[in-house]
Structures are given as C-alpha cells and as structure tokens.
Length: 410
Image 1 (cartoon, rainbow, N blue to C red):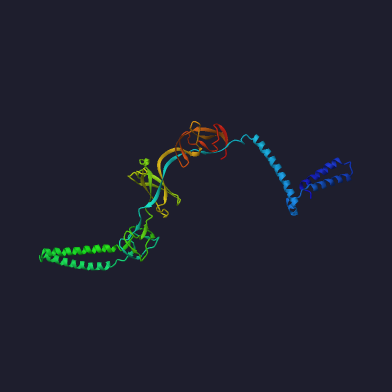
Image 2 (image 1 turned 120 degrees about the vertical axis):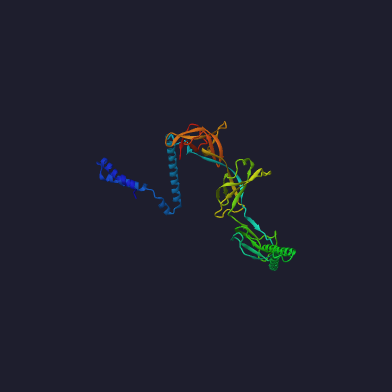
C-alpha cells in the first residue's frame, strides 16, 4: 500500500516526466512509473502493531533495536539544539532566584517554658466514717452537683442512738422551759433553774454531735464536677484516710502552672500576655498570667506562674504537658525576614541580597549589610539595612555575588 506522502508526489512526477520525455514512446514512460510505484510500495515499513501480530520474536526484537537507534539519534539532535540555544540565549544560564517584598510589621518574641495542666478541683474522696459501704449512687463519667449524695456507709446503730438523744433533749427542753416560767414567778430556787438549763444545753449538744457523726456516713460531693473513677464497691468495709471512694474532677476551672527562670522576674507580672500550646490535643490558647509566685526555688532558680485556660469542649485534661510562651519583647513597625536568608561575610557581618529589577524577569542581586535583633521561629528582626518595599532574595541567595545578574522565577 502506497503511503499518503508518495501519493501526493506522484502527480508532480507525472508532469515532470511528461515534459522531459515527450519524444519518448509511451511504453518507456509507463515502465518508469511502474518501477517508481514498485519502489514506493516496497519502501513502506510495517507498523509496530503489524509486527506484534506476526508473533515473530526475532522480528519484534529487530524492530525494537531499530526504534532504539532512531530514539538515540533524535536525542543527540535535541542535545545539539539545546547547546545552540544556550549559546544564543544570554538569559539561559542566569541564576534563578525567588523573592519576597519586605513589609513593616509587629514583631513579638516569646520565651518558651514547659508547664503542666492542672485544676484546683481534682480530688480523691475518702470516707470520714468506718463501716460497710452499703450503697453507691453514682457511676463513672456522671456529672454531679455540689452536695449531691455519692454513697452511704452503714452507721452501726447511730440512728437509734440519735433518736434516743433527741427524745432526752426534748424532755430536757420541756423541763427547762417549765422551770424558767416558775423562776420568773419567783417560785423555786435559782439552782433548780440553772440545773434544768444546763441539762437541756448538754442534751442539745449531744444531739448535735451525734447528728454530725451520723452525717459522715453519707458521702457528698464537695463541689460540682464529674465522677472520674469509682474506687470502692458496695459491701466493702472502708476506713477514714485509708480507702479511696471516688475521684471527682471539675474541668471548668483549668489552668497551667509553669516554672520560669528568675532572669524573667522583672518582665513577668499578673496580666502579662502569654500563649499556651498543648500539642497532645492540637490546641493553642491566648491568656494572661493570673498569679506570680513569691518564692524562688533554690534548686533550679525558678518561680511559679499560673495561667487560666478555657475548656469549653472538655478536651483539656489535668496533667497534660503544655508549652507556655511568655511575651518578653515586642517591636512595632519593624522588618521581619526569614532567618535562613541571612549570611555572614569574612568580617563576621550579616548580609542579605535584594533584587533590583532591570526587566520583568531579570535584574541585579545587590548585597546589603543588615543589623539583626531578636529571632523567633525562623524569623529574624532587622533593625537596620532593609526598608519596607525592598525585594528580598529568598531562594538562590547562597551562591550569589554582589551585582550579579539573576533571573527571577516567581
């Protein structure tokens, strides 16, 4: 089958041959065209698909070798073209850099210390009375209000004793009241009046004392919170100061406590703004120091601070590790640049490169000496040398020289 290109040139060949072979006989012309057609038909190479369809391994390998040679030849030609372009394009080999515009901003420097999350309402509840734990009214995770009954301890007969004492106290009161009325009518002796009043007071005090003791058999929540753990079971004998009953935690009033080096004592006071980071839950809080300790620990030369933190979603838990960032320096309207753009010369001076444009994409890298200030989180404060609007070279600055022509790629 004759390919399309050859089909297109055959009509032109007919015209040329007819012009030059008019004197020849038609048979000669016909012979020439026949040979051309045969040659053209034989020059067409079979496609890769056709070769694969033959399932001839040798022929397939031969075709692969042939195409690999053609690919190598094309690659060599492309390399020659690239070499020529590099010689003719003056901007091709310029160093590529990226830049950013310098702006004035507020720079805050923080001192970071490690702290712990805590709450003042996180306690273990112990029994105040010895006896059998007859009833537990709460379960773990349950929210309780202040004064709620958590458990009941067998009173060992205190209720009966209290009833008897209350009856005696009632009788003593009746006697005291009658004797008082008689005394007011000048009937009876003073000693009788005083004895009945004393007996009544003693009975009342005994009732109050026993009632208080009986109240200890009922375990109540000292503050509102969540029952984090139930540590004793019903039927267990419990003793004051020995057996733990419940862990009660209130997660609403959380704070962070941290030890701060004494050198920052003059910079930290109640109201100093701080930032709290808790990596475990991925949270960051802004707050203020609410308390500064008055004691310097002689072992590590630190003082304690407390910072209140919110806990609306309940994710903040006691004993989490927190990073406390104390704002110990602030500069207004200052220039901040990436710390890795600053280099040093042989004199130990700090320098950066700024881009001075010559066209839309090319310009000159100018070396500028700078005076640095504080650094924080890979950012550096620049006190002198740069001004707002300068185009700082960020990437590609390490191998530059002063007044070198560069090309911007951003």
